[in-house]
Image 1 (cartoon, rainbow, N blue to C red):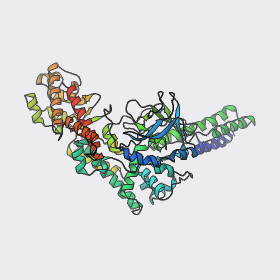
Image 2: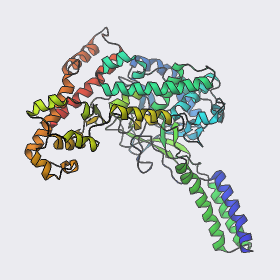
Image 3: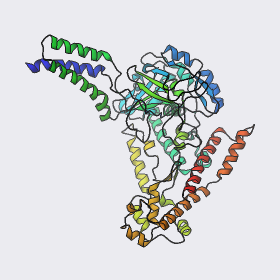
Length: 558
């Protein structure tokens, strides 16, 4: 009898909670490699927003965004003291129109005015009509999120600009860029000659191969109705403007809790059961909410990607960002809030996260001077000129040392290992929508230099073992792991000499010097008639930053 009374009450509450349950977190964070940590509304970083460096393109777009803010008002997008303006040297951006105090909300975008795609087998775009363009739903859902977004934009641009919830996005669509200055749009010869950086050229080659594969599948499914240019533009808009995080649950709805309270009161008040039994039923509602909004998304590895009109105009600054983006749980909206006070006329910046110039150029089409997160990826140790390094040292490396480093996995990958990884990656495209490009950003196991710290400490450890004398090797127990710290002044000097020689050889192999590039960029900027195309000027700016990292890393090793 007791169970008979309790079970229907629990079942009713659980059913209601699964239909309209609220998510229990208000946070929404950007998608970043490496995977983000705890999700909190104050620790958000933006993955992708446009930073167009071509000023003439911004002027053209400025005309198209003239109606965007009016459209925003009609769709309950609230702006406080900010406006979309043409920013010299940066294209379009958000600029303060009044004094803004720290912590103030400057833009609020309701979820109804956003576009979203949820990854995973249970995901897809928030507009169900996009997925219906594919005959095979499974084939659609294994596309990466940005390819799904590209189809979403294609539907809005060619079929109807109205979302399934009747929101007309045409003014926002008209404000979007029509091209990007990304290396995937350059031909291979230009990439190799202009960038002077093997790692970046290979990275773009992999991107082009993967995206071409996605496009061929999409084009076949749509009977040839989408062009490569449109598909590419859609992918780039998605990757440069979307935020993401683990939030995939429903919006906060107080009605379910109010109704639960009423049921608890009636249940106990009419004597259908004890207050404790009613409380147990209410607890099950809470558990069902957690199951829906936390356990199920984790189980199916879902992630939500969102583009927020107006907020997506904010540009990037690695150090000194002046605003944060967060999901406002109780109002079901996305907000941009000032972190410090912002003076009138200043641009409002957000951070896309710890992005190197490799990532910024490849997926956004711009380069950040003196980027504190920048890196340089050299070839792996196995590809270094061992003879030249031994010559600099004045003695050959001890027999068997390279073999020890090989077994420790410190020489990088062989060509066969790289090929095997590529086959595995190609296979994964058929079964998962995970974004493998960032995860496989260094497939050969190249030596990484950072602007902040120089050469990777693991590489220095390997070099200490490589240059060790027989006595040092014996004292270490013949274990590479015991060279993590300096073993002697002499050993450290030899290891740093070898590292410095390798870096100097890498720098000397460049077709132009840092000084020549800086002079070329200076002459191009000051010339009334441009001596370089925009893409080449961007490439020169990029390789200047890479050569600076090499020079700085060399100086650290002296």
